[in-house]
Each structure stands twice: as C-alpha cells, then as structure tokens.
Length: 193
Image 1 (cartoon, rainbow, N blue to C red):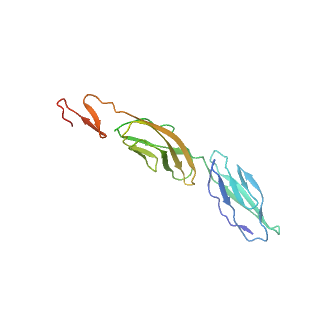
Image 2 (cartoon, rainbow, N blue to C red):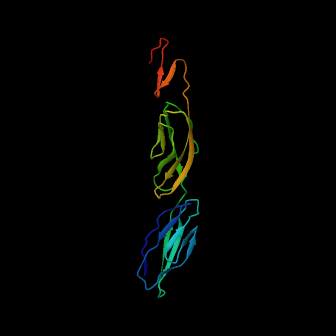
C-alpha cells in the first residue's frame, strides 16, 4: 500500500479547492482518515476539498493516512502552498477628454501566476483594454461610460471591479474646433490649419 500523489497543487484564499490523493496497492477497500485543516477536509475517499481560509499566504501541512481492509496503513505528509486572494487594487479611474490620448494601467494583488484582463460593458469609443490591463486610446465621444473589468489568474480565479470613465468636451480657445475627431485651427483670415 502506498500513496502515489507526490505533491499538492497550490491553493488560493477564498477559491474552492479540490484534489484527489491517489494510492497504489493495498487490499480491499481503502479508507483515508478524515482530516480538517484551514477550511479544507480530506474525505474517506481521499478527496481534499473546501474553501481555504488562511489570509497570510503561508503554506500549511496536511497529513494523509490511508488504511486498507487488512489494517495496513501508510501516511504521507504534504505541504499546501496558499496564495492570498486575487483582488483588483485600482479603485477608480480618472476622467478623459475627447480627442486627447488616454492611458491607465490597472493593477491587481494576490492570486497566482500571470493575470489576464477583460471588460464587459462599454468602454468609451476609442479606448481599449489590453490583456495586460492597460486602458489606452483616444476617446472620440463625450459622456459617462460604466463598465466592469475582470482579472483572471493562472488558477482560473477571477476578481471584478466596476468603473466609470467620464469623457469631457475639449475646451477650445479662439478659432479652434474639433472636426471628425481632429483638432482644427482657423486663422483670422478663415483658413484652416
């Protein structure tokens, strides 16, 4: 009888976790001793699952003991790495001005691995969100534009944040105007430049 699982996959605070602990050999029915640690439970069938609760990101130990029908048993000790919960740390976005370039990098904390960003709703016309979390472009219409941004880490855990960007009208002086999204200056003689 042996436990063949060599390590546990990483966990993330506040994200459901599930991993089966595999065995080889043994006689008859195999039964794991129930274990509960930090919001996770090891079932009699060898499934470690639950919602990790620790917030400090420290690893913790899980002892898995399995016994077969003849009373033979084996124990394996595992270290489970627990990462802090994924969260978007950018709380608000500044306003923009029509026909003036805009660029803001979103930030996140916690989670595991690389982040992938996406949005739902309507960014202002002319702006786009890159997969790396950069909102950039040149707004072409005024108004208030609410949207939701999601960030996903390498474990597939997602965090969301609601935003709104207000795009203001460009304040023009003298003989300036915006035509077709371009700034046009008119001289005192009526010629455009």
